Length: 379
Image 1 (tube, rainbow, N blue to C red):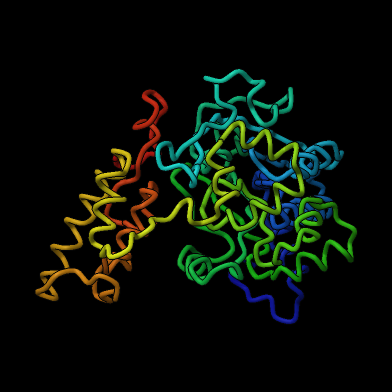
Image 2 (cartoon, rainbow, N blue to C red; image 1 turned 90 degrees about the vertical axis):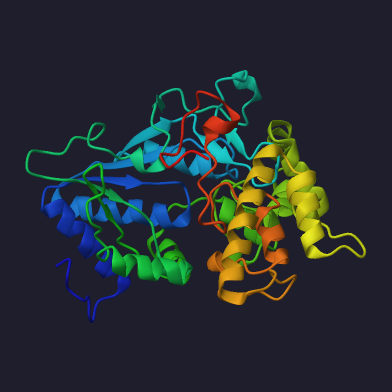
């Protein structure tokens, strides 16, 4: 069935069929649930499929994020209390991105170096501490051993509606059921073909429980396209809803700002707080050298110098002249084809090399010795 097209079948029935097939084959199925609408829908669908195949309770796993919109933890606790669910709540004390802080782009969830009273929230008393910091190592055979001859499979709420890259990635990785990863686990993506409307229709028609943070953000006039439940420090783009979050949950917001003061700065001043400001009469090349090298934290300056060296050399090879100030050279790699592009890409350092793809990741070890690496080449 994994290779069939579900012609004449609703996306709901197709999703149930995908999960039912996996349960019938006897594989060990674990649903990854962040508390957002997509993973919550996956949990509900897995419960339906497990009931049909006599495989209850459904195993669900979540990871502590500490800073997450209120309502998320409450939803996850309600899910954990359901008799159809067996919940595993992990605490990895992992580094997380703080996109609003140039000096310290990482913060540590439930940081062991702090008094727990300083954490925004406390994990449940029954949560499990783990050593693995990579999110892909939540669901691994050593934690959820499958039956002999069977596989461990992780249900994830990926939907291709959210980006063209996800659609291409789904086809390249083998469809709704992925290839085996390096830990011997396949991902199941039962709702890959669902839209936002499909999610909310299922919630309304079937009475599914969901994260009430969505209701609050909608009342605060957050556009539907930005109604995402995720740690608000992960990207500058998520900062667009920070002011609404501050107004919606003032007590929670105060705790977040005490924990990460740079978040308050962004909420007060907006994107200007995390963007290079070009001075009157200053070229973009001059702005780049000032804001990304001379006045930048050492880790950003190192990356800016190396990225400039690479791109200027590459540009000369195909253009024979200086890197443009503003108009992007379409031949240059990574979409960085001008000094304006360089400045915007490197002002915050790009620690995950999203724009500067030929630079290594900046490892947590750089900022806190002994905290480990992401598994790539250390920066």
